[in-house]
Image (cartoon, rainbow, N blue to C red):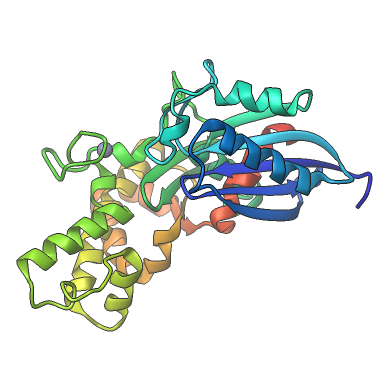
Length: 311
Ligand SMILES: [Zn+2]
């Protein structure tokens, strides 16, 4: 619609920059996904942001830009402090660079888990609930807590880092340098490591015969009835359930929304996860905190990124 006003939301991950335009009341209009794997420096990313914004807002008046980024942010400094998926942007004053590029259009930045939380809360599975915890289950594990429409940020924006909650003392080693983190049991990389470890111990197994070890190939093997592939999902699922039990006991949110690529394998991990949260949380907490699935898929973050403009 020529002449209409739009917001544009971005969600920058290690592989793709997702970008969507929204009407001023938050309705999705158009969306694009741009490959960022060729980006080597901050300006390469900046060019993609500018191109996407231009194509989404041609003939329209761009009223605000929301940016979600995969990483630990210091919003005071306008920097990504830590991001295994975006090493070229770590320490770069990306917020100021984006503000300069789009000035005078107002711009908001937040981390991707918080953006996904706001997206699902206001326009997805969390609609109608007062309190919601989101668990993002993919390459890593992230989380975010929303109460009455507001993200719980914590003293320095670090709240909700559920992936690095310790669920087993001296447990499996994690990419963060610690041991026993939830992410070291239930994430794409943890499942791949478990499958490879299994293959070493059981070289004649179907798991060892997989051409490419991934959550997808592991769930295909589970679907074919392979007990060992199923056991890997079940063990990981039980660990996920302990993490969910901890969320229930700590926050007792009305709903816990599970999102991310790994939920496609829910039939293989959910029964074990449910067993774990029922065994490890107070009954009153688990009965009142519903575990549900996200509705916006990988597009929750772009919707959440523009939420500050709608409030
Ligand atoms: Zn960790």
